[in-house]
Length: 269
Image 1 (cartoon, rainbow, N blue to C red):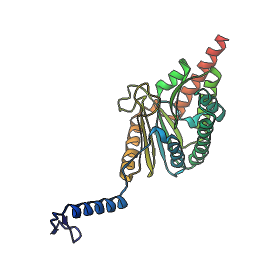
Image 2 (cartoon, helix red, strand yellow; image 1 turned 180 degrees about the vertical axis):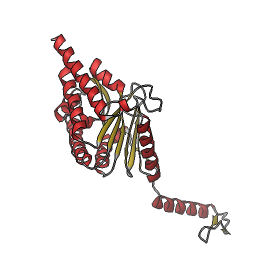
Image 3 (tube, rainbow, N blue to C red; image 1 turned 45 degrees about the horizontal axis):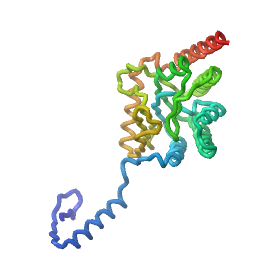
């Protein structure tokens, strides 16, 4: 064993222990000191800790600061409460699980609206998701319970998209970018979900194709990593073509999709 007795100096003392018991005592002491002075870089949430993960999402939402989110579809926080309940009921959840999901949604939504008054929120979503919603009437619902593809009715789609427009118009700090599949920056993936909260945490989920629960669900709170992720998302935002991130154009695009659904619905009826 070697030791350093002076600051900023190399090892200047060394000891040789041949006793196995002495080595084990020193090893255990070293691990105890190490564990008390450090923390893991990554915290993993397994399938059995879904509720704890949901609670942590609420805590992250409450922390002051800018937020970036990458997700295939719009955030569940864009859903009106009564529509979110309707979609949860289609997932065949137990009453207890439904109430837990709704309670977490309400907490996150309240904090979300409060923070939008003061901090910048940027969502990165896929144009493909909007097309699937409008043309195929399917929503990719992702929350702490996992990932589901749920069929939507025309009136629900209109209600949902109008709520997205209302949020964009109401909050100056809220923006949505719609990424094409060939965005060229490596972010346009359906099986990937990420939230970065300024100076606090990065949450990352990754799904294997056809899996309803993430194979990877982890949290990183190391400040240098968070800063790097924030810089990365700012860089990606600037690389997105203006028509795909300009708020006025995004609102116009969503409104055109609302009109498309309305016209299609009238023809069918």
